[in-house]
Length: 588
Image 1 (tube, rainbow, N blue to C red):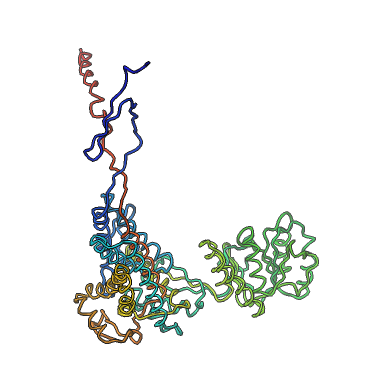
Image 2 (image 1 turned 90 degrees about the vertical axis):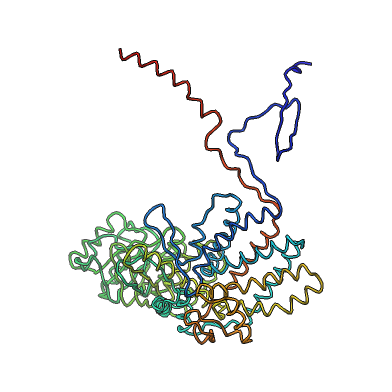
């Protein structure tokens, strides 16, 4: 019977219902804020408010007459952009239920951007359209799971349709057109990207950086350039420009440190007899080796320059093997069992020109065999296909570009930081779209036309499915209606009634036809160069349908309860300080 006199009675209020328990010891929870729950239609309506607000902000950027969005930045000036994913990333709402809807749509834009690099605005408005119509259907009593099955069937059918009408990209005129459309019809950006791709090839590396002039500039680095320079300034032949330039030099490659000059003497003597210049690329030169070579050069002996091997670890060995293939050299390595003292002139590589500075080395026109280079490139392509790491893929692509063509650097110009950032966003979007277009998937008519005719192609599937399962047929109808939204939005942003434009395009019966919002004419989209990469359109639809259909099946939403501004008891806790007034007597 011990303690019975101290039984506690607790009253817990949940949604105006009281639960009374006896003998329960109350526990104070200071860290947790608790959770808020919403169910059914009210939950979906709350998410819909967030979805509508983020989609409204993003959709104003769509099409040639789309507008920019200004975004406040915590650091630096505000950002002005026409990039859908950048706008989406900036949106966050105070209301947790609205914010959940916005975050899910933001996820759609991010995923599309990661996979295709473009089409984020299209993905956002498609997701909004699918979720809106899906929520209406669920509210009308339809089975949400059957709706999702219908949506999945429709998406699969549309992808097949897009592949049936796609056109491969054969020349740089089409690359120019894709880049121009993606860059908001800016032909200067389209030409810049087409020139860059023409010079470095479709697999070449194209990087975008901020320039220092008013105009955009293209710099193409042909040959192999790596970020590692001379081991000493005393090797430079041009002291004014701090560089060494050798024409037709011999190239010695090793992945180890050279610490004994006697290992090098045999090959140095052979090179001296040939009266050739020598470039040594090694991990490092230690002890007397470096000083001996410098003194020898200073006294007018052998023309030599030592370079530190690029990269680290396994990447260093791989890069040196690339250089060996490019120049026709034999890599001196413990793995292959070759030794420096056993080298012959035939084991050294050569190149038409080598330029070495304090920070980098450029090898032009290496003497490696074309078959060996091709085989090496194929090996790197296989490695790109097998790795899942994006960082590793980028490194492999850079190696491939250096072997196969070169690297193009686009320097973005502008009168202000805001203008440079806005241009840079458009160039990166255009570059991603161009890369998607030159892939095996090719291009389809742009301006929303491909999706518009895909919606018409769904009619037969919808009738067939509806006869067996009405709710699944309604899921197909949801996709059919959503596919018209991109074209309607482009027309709306151009100040034209979208429904009228859609009806006229569909009435033509030709999937190549569409609406040119720039000239306000109905044209053959392929002939006008208004085209979209198939990969971009396909990815946008898949990502939008995937997330929006899951949102439609949502029956409960759980969010954190808002935290109270003042902790309990803090308001009056300092009241005792009022007694400090008595200290006024101390003035006497």
